[in-house]
Image 1 (spheres, helix red, strand yellow):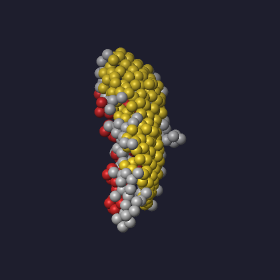
Image 2 (spheres, one colour):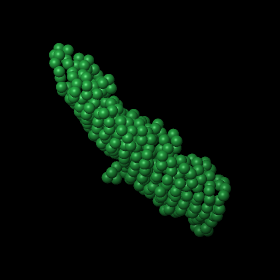
Image 3 (tube, one colour):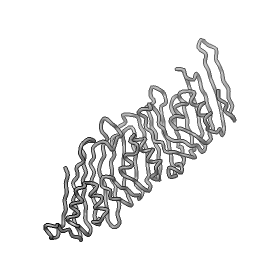
Image 4 (cartoon, one colour):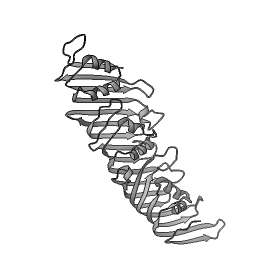
Length: 360
């Protein structure tokens, strides 16, 4: 039994061979607490709403019509008007395959309707919680919460400016099921515009897709850790893999990163565990300790080359990195073309203008 204040309730039990139960309820400015959540979880469709959106605080207006809860003849009409609600997107459908992106959200307002097993989220606006960097967020979509069709999810979540935080690392790690490995591999800092699209399994664009438009932050790929600043461009990630098209600067140098990380066919969404095809090109990069450290990270043997040649000045760099599959060795092709600098070998002390190193 649940007691919810500020509500009007009525119920009917119709006499027939099989008793029919009807419940009507109306509440205004109701505090969303464990009592309200437990009441919603008491019937299947309400459970799907609470489990999918995970509301924990705030207030709401509601209108409810419920017939034969838990029976094949169940009918649910539920209108929720959200007022300053705290929630996070925990996804809908099978717990083993559902798409989750649990960024903490506060001050959510808007309307949620549940009719005939169809949950409609109508232009819910909110703010990201302080620990998630703040910023506006908008969510809308439609979900079939019936048991037979509970994988039919159409959700769009749009964040015009999302700060890279530990909370985002956790949410992205939950989405791709890698405990933050993808986030750590690229070490983003600053902010980006982010759009999440969730669709039914088998959709041509994938079950989920995240579009990330850079807003001038920093990025450091762990495979060649030369930090890219003032980043512009787009990253498009889905359960099939990730496409990268970014450019930026490092002082007076210009850099670009393009390519793909592909998920293994048997592990959709495991972006860090599949084939790699990346190309990093730079112009006017100083031949300094940072470039040396990045080259040595790529291949420790390059440190001996650096010691022997003692390069100075600036260079253009062209690096291609490839991996055929997750268990294969990563190969690279690196070319450094000196510009306004010199390099001299111990055994052949004459100027050198081009350096090449390759590992296939």
